[in-house]
Length: 130
Length: 330
Ligand SMILES: Nc1nc2c(ncn2[C@@H]2O[C@H](COP(=O)(O)OP(=O)(O)O)[C@@H](O)[C@H]2O)c(=O)[nH]1
Ligand SMILES: [Mg+2]
Image (cartoon, rainbow over the protein chains, first blue to last red):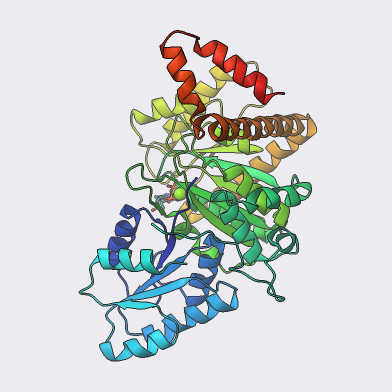
């Protein structure tokens, strides 16, 4: 049986709709990935623990509420603490350009802003997954 | 697509040596458990070794299968039952299976979304799996994933099937007790589904009893079970529940416990497990023989020579097969 890339799609923070996350989830499925979808309002602790239990290769988070600078790095740290050393973490949502360097510094592999195509996300994952 | 094998020096233990997944799983490492299930599911080389090492520590968990049509509330019910078992101090494993798309090979595994409240409970471990081409409602590797959780020390392990109706037969082989979840208002579908599931349910729940038609469904199901169950000493109980409100959960637990005691008391549990072990043994053997034939006869091209001779009517497939078998068993 072949290996499948497994991706956790999560929505941290308090903002209330997940249309974007669902579109991404479907695109990733259509690209042949196994997508574990965990829905709205997940805490960093929940996201990291779910990523461990599902042994995902990628954690994809999207956020609209502006708490990304705090929440994204927190997830990265929790994952590393749990021994998920190779998990690729990517982020998306309404994120100011100025915030991106700090996020990358904190271990977020890539940040996709609203103009990004789902095919870009798929390509990025295929190229960078460990 | 390049996707390197995991588990080869990628997860070094302290000394830089490769992590001993089986040993660390037995020591209680959640990271080791999750890596073991991945190795099993992807058939990595080390999976057989892991299974061998953990096998002596399996056979202690109670395995509860949950099946029924998509949207019936299986995941919601699993969440509520798991919470109840946790209150009793039991540890819980959950394997939830969703369909893999035959077109892309991808899947959206959405069972977890109903169980988010369990994620941070250290006594619970939830793993979602895609069917990856398997047709019987489970994935090919479900049983081994259950064993990993069993060896890890989980007291009770839930297996939530895909829920496609009539083909949900594999769950009976994998579970000690099988619970079928139905809901009112399914129209004619229910007839087809009922025909397929009457024999497999040890316990029936009618979920969404807040919807109209629950009582009628109970009556119908009772009639069918009475017809079916004349000669049986266990008449599957039917319990109405409203899973998302937590109504009827205690009653379901009591019924599950009763069935567990029943099959334990009369030797059926032991019998089911012997049957399971036998099936497993044969599956492993068949798959080994299959790989052997692929490797020695197909990949080498030997088969093409045979086919040429068969086509020329110099020999026939039966003689060739007998000859190959003779060589293998030597
Ligand atoms: N009205 C009602 N809805 C329910 C009940 N139990 C679950 N649901 C809802 O039914 C939907 C499907 O539930 P889910 O557990 O995912 O079903 P599954 O596909 O069988 O696992 C969800 O939106 C649940 O909130 C119930 O007892 N009554
Ligand atoms: Mg479900």
